[in-house]
Image (cartoon, rainbow, N blue to C red; front, top):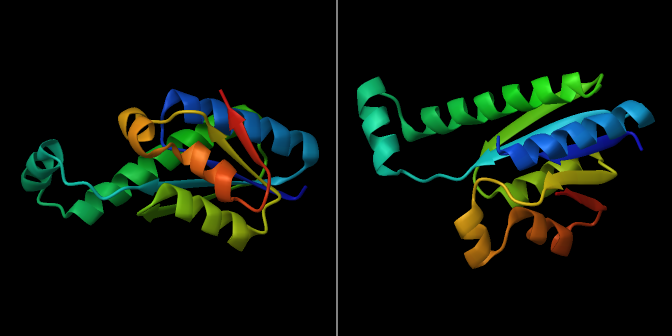
Length: 143
């Protein structure tokens, strides 16, 4: 294995998945690619923050992605990952993680069982469930 993609949303579950993926990369000498995608939702809180900061929704989503990736990289480095790349996007997390895995030539995808979207996951299915259903590479789901 030369490349593993870990999907992250900044939740404790995704931090566990990143740590597991980093440990696996350390043992295999593989590159770790961290991927996160913010789903565009303009909530009341975001609108208020956007007005106060005079920022666009895109600016806020990109800043959130950067913060999530920064945290995930710290987790990965602490767990022993030596080579860490980061990718971010706005949109559907499942589609983005699959695209990153394909572009990177990844041999596996690692994700947490449940992330921040617990209610949405119950209603329409979680990212991990979707990945397991459609991925062409193995998907490791970390509890």
